[in-house]
Length: 201
Length: 189
Image 1: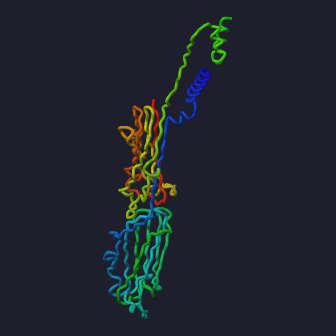
Image 2 (image 1 turned 30 degrees about the horizontal axis):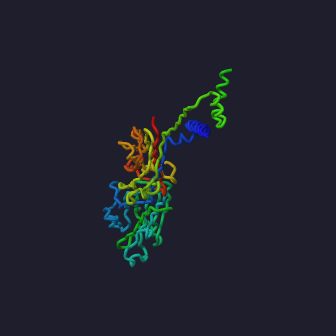
Image 3 (image 1 turned 180 degrees about the vertical axis):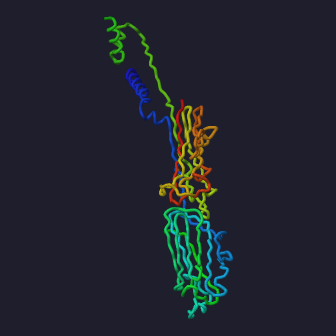
């Protein structure tokens, strides 16, 4: 029996000595652990308060908060619309493909006093204007035609994330009106609200 | 002829009952055999188990949603590898890949970035923690050597987050940013 155990022991030793050449040994020589690092970035658009551009102002008194004030909407002699234009910039960012929408609440400048908006022969009661928009690689235009008092919208898709300034240029043409060129305007305060949206497509 | 006889005697000695006959043939009253017993302990390392939650550093929302810029307070709890050991002199190596947007795979537009760099460290194994910064040109501290066998915990930490390309860039929107930190323990010569 003693010889049998010795034979067995010798055999085991030989096997153990053979292990280093095998793969199990190589795997035990190192150990690896992976950790995942995860996070997410939600889709976000930001649009700051507008700033009037110093150059290119025509007949503009200034930007008062969110109100662009026209110096003289009508010529004092003829009451025809005077040209006016300004560019307002809005620091903005969208970190995903999106769309930019520019919206006119009234489709033109209309009297704030609804009684003044009633058509009067020989007079104009609304002033059309154009709002041009530049944002990243895209441009958009909204023509507020002042033919009907309603909401007007222009929509432009943007394929990429963009950071920079949304530039909106408001232009009122000389003599523009909802009747005929150079028609005198009915007295009153005229206004419209322009909204710019950066939003998901 | 004498040589052949000696070999025959040895085989009988290993044969049990027949061994007595061999002893009788040689006329000895005692016999001695030497038996060597050998073994070895392999040089090996084991990585231990994660004791602090799952194997993920969850950072959540990466940006300040009012600006779109990378949050400055990004953090995730450390991970602990408990029961790691190496039975000999060893090295610890840390590697990492930047957090990268998984769905927005095209080149980020101007002003944006689709990845976030960070520094990962492994402490507790060596006096100087192993450290790796994604996006760095070189990571000389990524591998550290321990001169002796060791068993203990390894604490893995991530921090110093930075938008790849510069702090003025904004990460693009993506519901999955992923990176990987890898810890490797290896026997050293």
